[in-house]
Picture (spheres, rainbow, N blue to C red):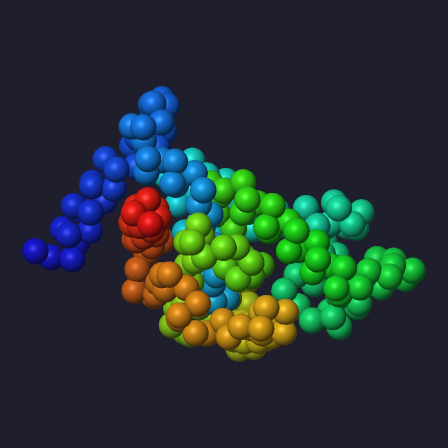
Length: 237
């Protein structure tokens, strides 16, 4: 049996498994898996240049779940009464970026780093408590409870990621490579300093997917399968 035929068969199985998720409610004793799934959140971590948003979008559409990515800094900006661009510019970056950006908007703004991250934690955890959603980035995989969070990490070959990053931003190869490495360093430093974890360790995740090997659709298939198995595992426990 080829890999393609295997994946096609698995996709058909998943369609049947997941079809009931959008059906009319059945008696509670007839849908234990659905009940377990309602408690889950999917946290998607990613290397810069991987198609994380596309993968999350496909998973969200198949499950009927919302995807939160840029919506997270938007909520923080709303709570802090700041321009969204200010919070987006410092999201997952060091205090120096925070102060530089805020000064450009309001020289009297005294938002501290600790206050910003308190709001980040509050927003991510409130989304996780609701369940039935995907959160891309923002350290969600380290903020939400592992038993009810499918923690996914998307990686890819460096050259593939540079090419994708450059196409998205219309940058030449050298500029794209430099900016990609800078963003990766900033995200890694953000997680190490504020969550005291090494994001490069695969043991921090339930599922690590190489987007140079698998298409966004393939990745979505794997994530759905992993979610199903983890939800079923929770029922057994």
